[in-house]
Structures are given as structure tokens and as C-alpha cells.
Amino acid sequence: MDVQIAVLDYGSQYSQLIVRRVRELGYYAKLYAPETLKELRGLEGVILSGGPNSVTDPDSPDVDFGFLQSLNVPVLGVCYGMQLLNKKFGGDLTPGTTSEYGPARLFIEDDSTLFAGIGGHSQIWMSHTDTVSRLPEGATVMARNEDSIPIALRFCKNWYGIQFHPEVTHTHEGRAILKNFLNQLNVEPGFDVEAFKQEILKDIIAEVGDREVVCGVSGGVDSTVLAVLLHEAGVKVHPIFVDTGMLRKNEAVEVQKQFAEVGVEIETIFAEDRFLNALKGETDPEKKRKIIGNLFLDEFFSHAGEIELFAQGTLYPDVIESATSGSIASVIKTHHNRVNRILELKAEGRVLEPLAELFKDEVRALGTSLGIPAYALNRHPFPGPGLAVRCPGEVTKEKLDILREADDIFICALRKHGWYDKIWQACTTILNSKSVGVKGDVRAYEFPIVLRAVISEDAMTADWVEIPYPVLREISNKILNGVKGVNRVLFDISTKPPASIEWE
Image 1 (cartoon, rainbow, N blue to C red):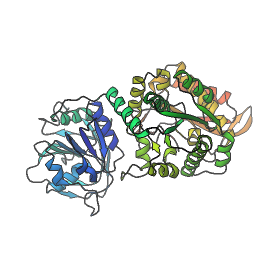
Image 2 (image 1 turned 180 degrees about the horizontal axis):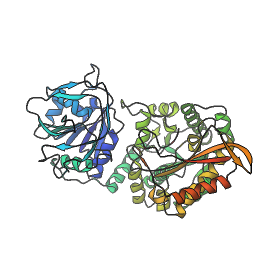
Image 3 (image 1 turned 90 degrees about the vertical axis):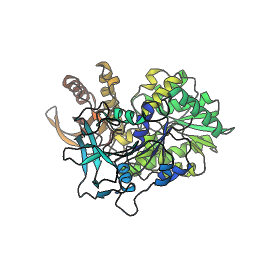
Image 4 (image 1 turned 60 degrees about the vertical axis):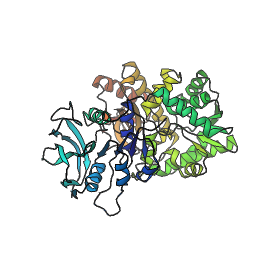
């Protein structure tokens, strides 16, 4: 499928969100490093993303401005992208001493194109430090913020720059703003999941050839879609399910039943003791993730022999947060599928990640296209390292068993009261520090449990869910009375950012 929109990645954690929004609007977009622009052909538009750098720095990321102009297509600069275009056209920037981060108001002065149909005081989302201090010759101000500072510019005919982020949901009319930009393209929207599925299948067949693919499966949405996708492509696939001991209650049995239903035969490895022994005494979150990731590969090598191709259901948020995609984004956390041995396999051309450019909702849509049952596709996301990332401090069998019971009570109650399908992800975390309580007139020194439930579209941003108090009370009572070793239940009301969805 020919790429219609190139999104140049300057390191923003939101860069891939731009790609997702463009796809939602019916255009095929992909993310590229700025230096690869000259290699692209047939583009209908270019978007320059935000990023953590300052355009005023001498070594800040750049763009081949002459080549960009020669494309003769609409261009949109977002945040850092706007500042870079302002500089390239001859304007100036003032380095800020403090950052402007969070909600702001949009005061529109020109509603003829980019802001057609947009509310005059619409909420937008800012995340920047530098400010435009002098406009280039010929540029016009399209909108300002509350302090009358230009935050949207038209540089020339169909070249624009905006200081805010239209791709995040906190910009209330961001989708409409992007649509107004895309309306200026010379092509009609035509991207859909079915067409994308055919493109992925074609790529899999071409990349795999006659090699055997060892596929890691967990029963989650991503690995289920991956396994069925490989099966649909007709390649030789050997799916392996590793029970690490970090799974939820009864999950191993449920996973085996689920894959039998979708017609994919899996090999199951029971390795709880090996994982617990490897994690013994370790408290550093990054080291725990790497231990799990490396041992996970050990199990694959020992059961699969020589691996010709290793497939995993990596999604783009994993790539972004691990900052290993060639992006200049900062590392948030290392995902289990981005440990050194995975990177070594990738360097050898032995890793297959067909879903690595997709977000969770796109994967679910792909799964529907593949005929996977809704119950499997609508499961809440579950991290690759499992309950280990919900167990700050040392991971022990005692803490995992407590987590399993508390999590089961939480999820069952959400299903019972009709809340499970309204929530993006619900999870239970056990804190490492015990708290004082009273049970049966006796001092109880036991673990606190934290409940977390969020709504999100893509895991890049998330808000906590206002579960009714009576439901929370019921959950708390059942955990406190039914789970040995717990004397306190908390409810996490943090948004992402600044918090992440998981605690580690």
C-alpha cells in the first residue's frame, strides 16, 4: 500500500498518535526519521511531529527544507515541527525558561482553512518551551493563546504550523483540525483495516519465505491476533506459550482453550519456578523486565531449537516507550520485547513483528477482520512481564498469589456490574511496603492493594475511571475479607501522563 502521509518523527511521545489519527481519517500514514525524507516517493502530504529538543540548539534535529519544498504537497508542523518551519522560513524563536504543559484555549483569527468549523475558544493541549518571537516574511497568524502569543501560523499556501498537539484527546477538536489539513490533499481517503490486513499478509509471506516462525503467545489480544495472522498467511508457525508464574488466576487453562477455539495449536511450557528463582532478591523495575525478557527467550531457545524467525506481538506504544525504533524519543521503560537479545535477533534479521506499527484498537479491528471471537479481542491489555510489573519490589510467590486473588475479585465485580467493557484496562497492584491494620482485635501488618481502572484509546494517554462508590465498596470488602495478607485497599486516580498505567 502506497504511503500517502509521511509523519517525520522528531522524538515526541505522541508521534505515532499522529499516524493513528491520520489513519482514522482514512489516509495511510507511516512514521519516518527526518533524514529518510529524500528516500520517500509518491507522498501526498507531510507532517512534522513534536519533540523534546529545542530548535535553538545547534545540534537539534533538522529537515531537508529544499527537498520538502520540492514535493509541492501540504505540510503541517506540530509543536517542534512548527518551530522548525518558522526558523526555516526565516523567523525567530525565544528559548523559554519554563515549559507550557497542559490545557490552554485557542483564540482563532483565521477560520478559512485549518480551523474551519472549529469553536472559537476550543481547548487545546500544549507541551513546549520555545516560543515564536518573530514571524517569517509572508507568514500570517491563524490563532493565538490567552496571552496573545501566536500558536498557529500559515507560512504559505498550504503550509501550516501549530504549537499545540491536535493528536491527543485533550485537544478537543484536534481530529477536526487534522481533517481540515487532510482535506487539502489531492487524493480521497481510502485506507481501511481490510486493505491493511492484505498488505500485512503479503509482507509476512515475503519476509518469512520457507523459514519456520516461532511465535510467542500469551492469550492476550496482541499475541492472539499475531498467531491467527501467521496461520492465515499460511507460513510454518510454532506457537509457544510460556507459563511464567506471573499470570492471572486460571489464565493458563483459559489460554489453552482460547487457542483451541481459533484453530491454532500451541505448545505450553510450565516455568514458574525458574522465573521466580531468577527474580529472587531483585527490586529494580528495569532489571526485572530484562530478567523476564531474557529468561523468556531462554525458554524459547530450549524448546524450539534453532530459531529461524522469532515472532512477537509488539505494538507501537511498546516501541515508543522503549525508544528503540530509531527515534530520538527518551526511554520511559524498557519493554520485555525490547531487551538486548531481542535487539540482537533484530540486527540479525530474525525477528518478525507484523503489528509493530499498530495501536491496540487497530489490532482489535484487524482481529475482527480475521474472524477472532469478540471475547478474545475485548480482553483488557495485560503486560508481557505479567504480574511482575504489578508487584513493586521483590517478586515473590506470596505476593503473586495475593495479587491473583485480588485481581480476580476486581475483574469479576467489574463484569458483574457492567463496567468491564467500559474500561480500557483494569489492574491490581500490591505495594511493597506493608501497612498497619486491625483484624479480630489483633494488630495486622499486611500488604496494601491498589486498584486501577483507566479509559484510553491507545495507551499513550489515559484517564482514571469514576467507578461508582457502591461498586468500589463491594470490591474492597470482598478483598479485605477474602484475600489473606491484605488489610488496605486503595484506588489510583492518576492520569497518564504524568503516571503510567502500570506501576512499573
